[in-house]
Amino acid sequence: MFVDRVDELKILEDRYRSGKAEFVVLYGRRRIGKTALILKFLEDKEGVYLLARETSELENLKRFSQKIAEYFDDFFLLRNPFRSWDAFFEYLTRIDERFIVAIDEFPYLVKANPALPSILQEYWDTKLSDTRIFLIICGSAVSMMEKLLGYKSPIYGRRTAQLRLKPLGFFHIRDFFPKYDWENLIKVYGILGGNPAYLLEFDDRLSIKQNLLRYFRLDSILYQDALFILREELEDPRNYFAIIEAIAKGRSTLGEIVNETSLDKGLVGKYLSVLRELDVVRREIPITESYKSRKGRYFINDFYFNFWFRFVYPNADLIESGNGDLLLDIVTKDFDSYLGYVFEEVAKQFLVELNKRNLLPFRFLKIGKWWHKGEEIDLFALNEREKIALFVEVKWKDLTSVKRIIDELERKADLVGLEDYEKHFGVVAKSVKKKDNLVFDLRDFDKIIRPKQ
Image 1: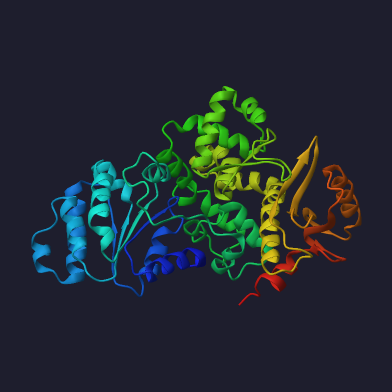
Image 2 (image 1 turned 90 degrees about the vertical axis):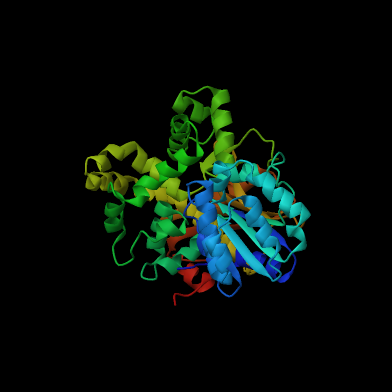
């Protein structure tokens, strides 16, 4: 199944149509859909997909030789495979047509031969940039890929484009679960996030609880993968895990995380920086504050990790002992509270979609949260040039009326201090019995986003 990735495909297609030599770096966490994107791009084009393995340099070169030889019907190359990267790149320089060479899991090759980036740099500078080759290097080890893109890397400045693949947004996961209604889709999103490989582990012929029971098993990819991914990226994961678990529990400020983990403040700050670079954690500030504000809060960037660290990691002994049903009971008791947080992100994505379609009173330029001294506004959208603001409360509840909520929003809006702004107020809820303008519930997802096929 291939879902969305419209923007990423357009970038690749535009580069392809340039006809010039291109060097594209594609990376992102494991199972995020990088290989699917490459194969989709390759469908109607001349090119080869080469998957590196964690094996010897000569073994990878032999396998690459075979793939290329088979493509070009090159009997000589088949009998005499590449013995070095110089030979590999020299061969590419002799291809005189528009041709894609996509190398997946590139970090494995660098691990086997650290000189590879320097060899690639030399060939790109002297020969490859004058060809019509479309080179893609791809990797799942985010930290290593970031180093390859860094200032100290030999290939710094050589790439013509880079793409960091992110999880799918909420409104794309419906393609995976046509039988689920919006409420169930929000539950799925809160458990799995937008990672395509994880979404494929759930089955919409089963209930959410039945799917969770399959998740809470020793042989489940969903149970095992969080550990695998983070241990691959982090040298000493124990302290990182403590920090992520604290954030999953709702400890969002630096002080709260320090108190929860009992780690040194400087150490927590350092670990948080690494987690932000890996896109596991993000830092948010009130929307009216500058980037340097000390009011920052930390949130887990992916609901798969958020759910895993909130429910699974602290109760792993239940899965290890074959008592997944007991973990399901724990999740069930706290799930509605957890979904309130998830629904805020869904509501934010919903407003972004409305904004794209010009279905709000104005086009906002930024959206986020606002908080100050115990007061908080769930979503706050701004157009500072036109001096217009939208204040939104998000409720994972069935509401009969929103009057009190709007009155409270108006009170909070006065605290923000935008006296000369035009102000609008709205609510996004699970359901609302009596609806007014700028009051939305799950029924509006169907009307505005996309009807079920």
